[in-house]
Length: 152
Image (cartoon, rainbow, N blue to C red; front, side, top):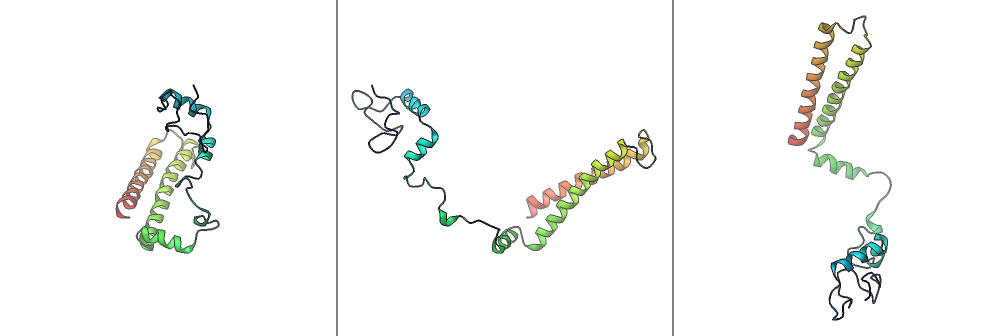
């Protein structure tokens, strides 16, 4: 009995799922025959067999562009983001929240390395400043997130 993978989907052959006369009465191949056919053919071979099908090409050469992004595209992105003002506010908010998160990390390194002639066990000095940075950073991250996700 012929295997469902024979023919390779080219002219005269059958793709998986099509009736190919595999059975004695010309019935559809069984699921196991279809599975065997898929295992024996590579994805590239299956794609090559269907390359002339409509919709097989995701993009044509005319649709592709190379190089830098045009200013018209940048203007469209900014307009979609609510205009120059809102995009500028969002960019500043991103910079502020990243700066505060970074300052929290920097403060931890200062604490570990005992900068400013303070002992690391002097928690009355180190902890309040660390908590202040962490609190401000969390407020900035939350504020930026709400602004970007709700306002824009």
